[in-house]
Image (cartoon, one colour):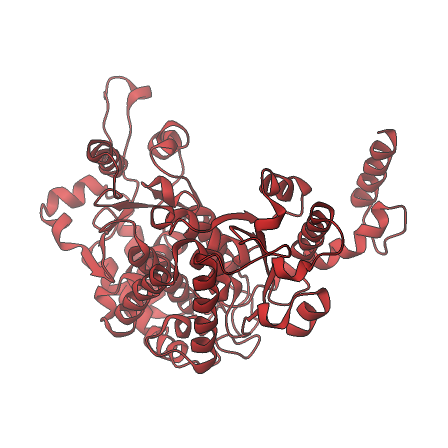
Length: 521
C-alpha cells in the first residue's frame, strides 16, 4: 500500500462510501430541502453549486481532512512562492507569476513588448515584406502552444477589436495548414511559430510549409522574416531558422505549455482582442489565484472541485468526467481541459517513482450544450456508467445576443442538471425511465468576457493541482508524451524504404502495407 491508501482517512472514506453508495441524490435533497442553497461556493466571480453530488457533510469533512493531511496548503504556498514543485525536473511551476499584479521583471518586459507589437498591428504599422499591413495571424503550435490561444480567441470572439483575424494550425496533416491558408493573402499574413524548444516536429514542419507558401506567393526573395514571430525558449534555434531577433518572444522553463496562454503564447489572442482585454483576462485569473491562495479549504472552489473528483474516481469508481459548457463560444473548452487534466495527472507513479495503487486522472470529454443533448446525453440519462459532469453557463447573454434565445439555453442547462440528478419518466415504461443519481457541478459566470474566462481557466488549473497533491503525483511533467515522439523519428526512414531498429512485427507489417499502397497510387 502507498502512503495515501494506508492513511486512516482514506480507509474511513472507503467505509463511508460503502454506507452511502445506495443513497440516491433525491433522498439527500428530501432530507435537506435547503441543500441547494447551502452547498455552494464563490470565488473570482464564479458561483459554484455542488449540491447535486453524492456527498454528505461527513463526506466533505473527510475529504477536507484528507486534503490537509496531504499538505494542500503547504504545496499551494510553495507553488505561489516559485519553489520547485515540478519535482522530476527540479523547477517551479510558476504560471501564476505570468498574471501577477507585479510580475517578475522578465514577464513585465515581455508584456511591454507584446503591447508595443499589438499597438503597431492595430494601427496598421506592422507590415509584411511588400509593405502592406499584416491583417491575419496564423498560429503554428501544438498542445499547449495551440489549445490555450485557440480556446481563448474563440471564446472571446465577441471582444474582437476588429483589426486582426486569427487562424490556428496544430496537426502535421497537411490538410490542417492548407485549410488555414485558404483565401489568405500572403502579403498580409503573419505566422506565429510557438514551440518551447523550437524542435517540435509538427510545428516546425508546418512552419517550413508556411515559409514555402510565402516564398511561392510573394515572388523574388522578399524579406520573409517580416512574416514570422517566434515564441520559444530556444532563441538560437529560432534565429537560425530565420526569425528576426526583435520578433522572438520568450518562454521560460518554469511554465508548462498547458499553463502558458498567459504568456507570449497568448499573442494571437492579444492581437485579436487587444492588450486591454488581454489584461482583463489576466485580472480574472489573478482574482481566482487570490481566492485559492487565501480562502479556507472548505470554501475554496479549486479544492472543492478537486476533492469531488478524487471522491468519484477513487471511491465511487467513475472513470470519466464530462465538461458541458452551455455557451457555443466555449466549444473548445473540453479539448483544452483534456490536455490540462489528463496531461497533468495522467500518471501511474508518485513523486518518488513508486507505482500508485489508486486511480488518478479521469478521461475528460464533452461538448457545448445544447448539441450534446441530442447525442451523448442519452448515455448520461439511461446508460450504465457513472459520469460526473460540469455544467458551465453565463448568466447574461453576449452583447447583442437575443435574450429569449439565451433564456432557452439556460433553461436547457438547468433542466439537464436536474434531470441527471433526480431522473423521471414513466415508471410503467422502463424504456422511458431515467433513474437519475448522476452528479454534477454547475458553474455560473456573470457573462462570458475576458475576466470570467481568465477566472474559469485558473479554476481548472488549480483544481488539477489540488488533485495532484492529494494523489502525490507531479502534475507538471509529461514524460508520457515523449516516447511516441521519439519512436516516430525512427519510423520515418522506414516508411521511405529504410530499416527501423527493434521494430515489432505489427508495425513492420503496417509499414510494408502502407508502402505497398503508396506505390500502387
